[in-house]
Image (cartoon, rainbow, N blue to C red; front, side):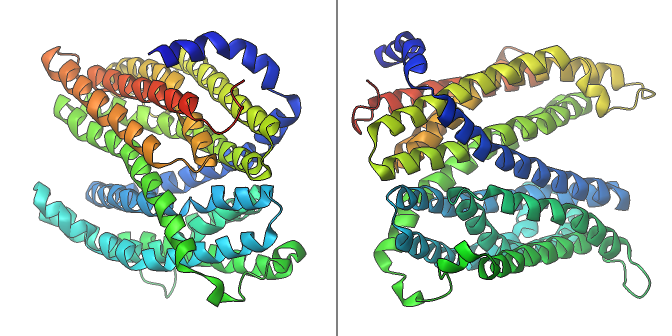
Length: 466
């Protein structure tokens, strides 16, 4: 607790001393395309969900559940591969471009190792639903979609490596442009393959999965072509000297990445479990929760983009072994986290009453009750954001120092050991229902944010705190 008070007392003067305009510009310039990528990816997910609803409510339910299970597998595997980003940033900071090439090759080989377990896990995702008593017709429909998503996750492992590599190489706009181009392609492929066109038969949910696979393979092909056509990327000689992929380098990726993977599913998992809990409180509570989760996706996109940029900026500075730049990168990142959290809180507080009506039919008899309930949950989401943004930045900074294992433990402790018991107690014992669940989520995020900032303060990597 003394560490937390020390951070709070010393932060204002340190922010003034070390938050530079140049570092702020570099951080935001790197983060902006990453935030946009996260928002576009969310747009693809929403497009898939809407089109599944056009088939039938049962198809929507089957697709949504399989999609959630796919997300758990993907976030874990992509989290492992995100270790590529700080490693490349360190090499870039040290001016060792040869090592950048080796790290990227190791990332692609690591992706190859993960392809089989990832694909097998998704392949049987729908069959696992039977263990939870899900209706057989939902399982059958979901099985078609799961088979195609098992194919999709294969190229997505390599897309994850490219995403982290482009971020560390300060080329996030390349990934953004490709993702923007993929958005309409995904929607068109969904429509044609799900509902049929001319000689192309309607494939239903399987068509949505196949469309995702085709888009993912197209992204991998596009990035590979770009690496041959762009002079600076071509100079990296990524597709040569595969024998230089050594065991020690691969082990480092997995050593740093596996905790990040558990960190990722530790974050996603509490929200998935909260959906299950809130479903016990009725349709209106679940609808309000669904609206809040959509807005939480926007909040998460902002935090994700900023945190990815923070990891790269800190990694650059650490790789240069420049204490002044490290201090600027750390304090600028934390300042950005605090400011973004406050901005999101203010924005949600001001719009909480109006936002739910973007998702509701005013003619519906239950719309008014859902809107009021969603307003309360959105206010709790705003409070949660006051901790989420600083926590994301503290974790990102620690990744820049190659510190991933302890942050994983702190995130899981805050979310699961503190947040979920509070959610359960507030929802059932205190009788607050869905509001209690979200209050517990906010408490868990706040707790892990304090723990993460304490960990950052404890680190002794030079004089960056002074």
